[in-house]
Length: 348
Length: 232
Image (cartoon, rainbow over all chains, first blue to last red; front, side, top):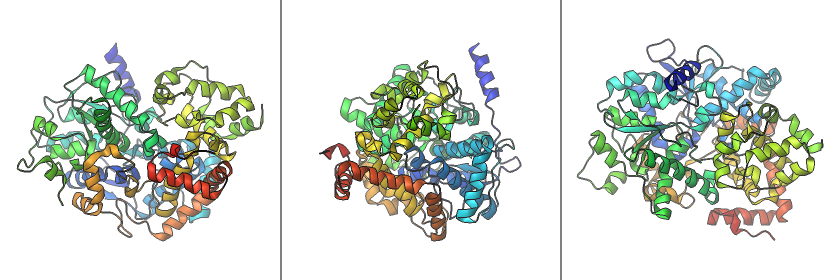
């Protein structure tokens, strides 16, 4: 019964994302993430290298594209109307200036935000008209809606592109996750706002598990697997509210430790989860004297490691709170052992 | 049914977020914020459905609407397709519009949000900047982050994600002025600028003067905790 339910859910939540061998899969427009560039910039760097060098994808992005503004939307400094017109502007630039039809974003909140405005344009003709008119008035630009997944109005996330190409990436990998226990933590804004737009939906998300399985990992489940990391917006941004973030991370990791004490790898696809599930382990260690030592890796960082990119220079594991060397040893990824941990992290 | 509820009803986020809530409580059961704060999404939906302006005003003046972390776990699980997180967004806009946000401690943090997320977008075209993640406000990130912060430019070059390049694609680039002008015009025309202005005005009214608003802001910048500013 359990498996049948899972298969049914998977059937309902299929999403079509072209691989590099399919039409449209080797030319993408991409929207960079202001969160990723600020809190984990190296992640975007290694994702770029993999997409261009290992998959041969041509990536186009415009100098004039801006943040989607969604941190301000969920942080209450702008309106839905603002979000719609800013999104329309970014879409218009990608299509008319960069000549791309397929678009992905590096941030899950941008992905949710672009999905939200596209759905509103479909459901509310007045808002579509408002956006077209306001975009023209404010920028002189033409309106355009992307149709990425299955020819319907949609955008996708960068991790979807990795998922679509996972078998090709696994073939190129120098190292495997065989014998490694791992689990996923899918960003709320990837899977929870519009489950129908997530690879596998909110119940059985496959976007990260599919990658882990392709690389040979043993997937483990735990009770709080779908619990939010507690990033929030005003919560993670302001130190005085961060007890909520730390509390959520504690709840998740305590649950994982109880169910699978030998699982030390969580794969993520959201900048907030990637940064705070790692960083708050330091706080928890200091406040509660409890250590989890679970490496939190972004899908691009893990893929980079397995493809043979340098763990520190390329994959940017310098700035993590949890030491990554034990995981590298477990997988069998070499690094310069003549240097101290500090020297590896501080190159200048 | 009063003025506040009528206004709330006009908001598309309310219209899409509220589809006859049966108050089953699944939203509260799954809500991370309800676990750690005096907050219940079910209670919020109850109050709103009462259509009672006095109760709604009390809610808008409280900390409660600001506890939501916007994860939308409530939307995923609601058997009736409601989205409390969307209703919360509509309530927050209403609280800012009427200045009620300044009556609660968490609501007053809106000044910080406005001066970080809002002003970043108008000045640089990003809602977050590399410089925002400072070690003093993010001690959790630890000593490795402190090193990165002190060597930000070199480290980003080393990682292959250089910053502040002009007229270039890429991370943390300088967005051309012509594009920035378009963004500012959009923010003006779509009401974001007036929403941000309402935050400044609401805080000035609550704290008594522009100088006190600056003191509140400085307190947060210096101590990372707005509660260190005492309301007279």
